[in-house]
Image (tube, rainbow over all chains, first blue to last red; front, side):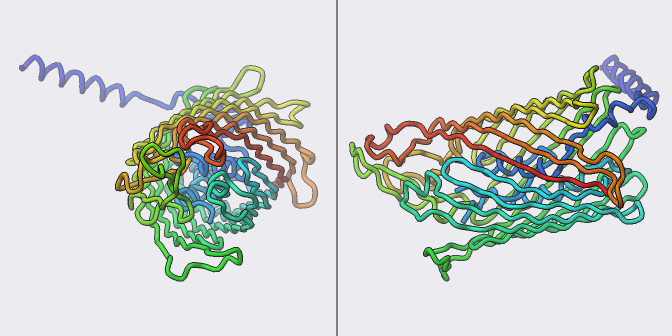
Length: 75
Length: 389
């Protein structure tokens, strides 16, 4: 039992020390490609909102996409 | 009546999307879009204009406003089966949102209103987005509340049933995470929980049941839905920068709710700039599959067979595939007057819907329950002009 406690303690210490050393690994000057407009999650909000709404109004599932739109036209 | 259950629950998401469109320590671009859009499929045509404007104040506050009109004409399969008159309806939607940037935190609030002849919806939303970990990580928490009023039109002049007025309340909670993984790869995770309480069905739709034991014809009766629904949706997405300056995006979403609907959504997007960046092409493929709700049936054996009964094809087992192509042309790339740039876009999506336990009951030459399974195709066109200022 003691061995288990010691192992848990050591494991926790190791995990915490790892967290302490964790640094942002992509520097700001390395984000040129990520800033390119081809990498935008949602380039045109007016369009993504509309097509999401087209789908959601004809499907049982909805939400959880981080973007959506209003409207209907279903029945 | 358009549809009650999915109308307003998606409205709050517009504000959520607007609020989370930007990273948490930079306000989004000031921009205006004017669009004409059209959906044509399954006997219905929905078209009309849409506009979205965003402007910033002193690099701290961003205001958004949008206005959308849906003109609905035609008759869906449900209306054909019930012998209802074709639709000629208009829906108008307005939104207003504000984002406030404080350090690495963005606070967002919004209001949305949707009005049609038999359905009014109002949604209020709030979110907080925090940029952290050397700007590699953005965490967003969101909540919204919706209040809907459902009424019923009883004749072609759009007169309402004075004795029919129902409420539907909705609450949503969301958690979002955007993470830079490498200099070429970003990831996103979103979770949303939605609770709904009130009138969740469509007052015009009906179930069908056999006229008697061994009968080959059917009768119709009212749908009966539960008064509550709780839904959960979780999604992951990855976007990768390709060596030849293009991007590839993969998305997956899992959905389940207390009506026993389980759904999977897969999507792949490819983005390619062309002609010295003057034109951007997006190609999209999306696949969706869901199981039916526990109280759904295409054909009940007799009236009052269950406590809850539905024949909404949205609750049926179904799958659909979407193929999309979008082209964006930058026709003004340098500053003119007060405009920074401008572009024109054309999007086309083709959607093939296929139902696995919803039959085409309009084909009355078949005995009830043996009609062909229903399927249809739809086209979605969006054309819009965007200006940055």
